[in-house]
Amino acid sequence: MGGAVLLLPGGEEVSARRPSPVRALTLIRSLGRALARAGRAEGLAVHPVHYRYRGWNGSEARLAADADWAADEVVRRYGDVPVCLVGVDMGGRAALRAGGHEAVNSVVALAPWLPEEDVAAPAEPVKQLAGRRVLIVHGTNDERTDPELSFRFAARAKKANREVCRFEVHSDGHGLHGHRAEVVSLGVDFVLGALFGHRVSRPVEDALAAPPPIGLRMPLAAGFGRSLKRR
Image (cartoon, rainbow, N blue to C red; front, side):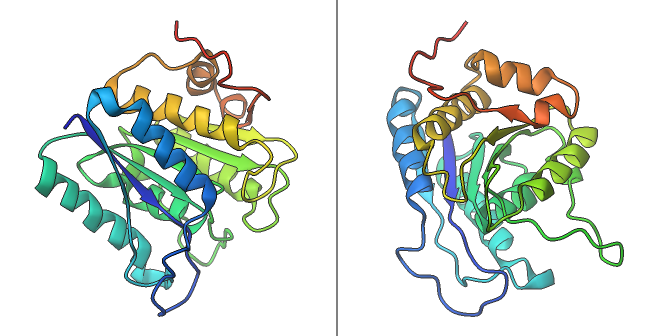
C-alpha cells in the first residue's frame, strides 16, 4: 500500500443524531472514484469516513475527532503510509483541524464550513497544518459556506506554512456543480503530487509558490484537466 485518502463528508454545526448513509455529497464521491482510478498503480487506498454523529458540537469537535480516529486506523491497517484528508463542507473543517495527525501529509478542503471570526473566541487553529500541503477550493457564489472565511483562514495558514494554496471557482455555488470536472481534476492532480511526489500541474505549482493574496485567490480555469500535462 502506497498511500491513503480519507473522504470526510459534510455535517452539521450542532447535532447528536446519527448521520444519514446518503449524507455524502456527489462531489466527494466523484473525487473519491477518480482518485481510486488514478492512484491504482501507486497502491492508493480510498476510504470514506462514517461519523458517529452529524454535529461538530462546539469544543467537542466530533467530526475532527472521527477524522483523527480514521487516520489512526489507516496506520493500524497499512503501516507508515502518507495520508491525505479530503473533506467537503463541515468535513472540510474536520480535515483542516485533523491535519496535524502524524500520518497526514496533505489536506484538501472543498467549500469548507468555517466559523465566523469573533474577537471574543479563539480563532480556528492553523499551526497543526505546518509541514502539510494544503488545498482549499471554494465557489465564489457559495451561499452556504462563506468563501471569504476560507480566504482569511488560508491567509493565516500561509503564514505558518508556505505549502498552502486556494482556488476560487467563479460563479459556482456550494456543491461546485457547474465545474465539477475541473474540481475533480484539480483534486486528483494535487493529491497525487502530495502523496507520491508527482509533479503537479503548473496552476497548482504557481498557486503554492505565489505570495498572498495571489496564491490564495487563484482562479480555477474552465476546462482544467482536459489537456493536463505534467512538466
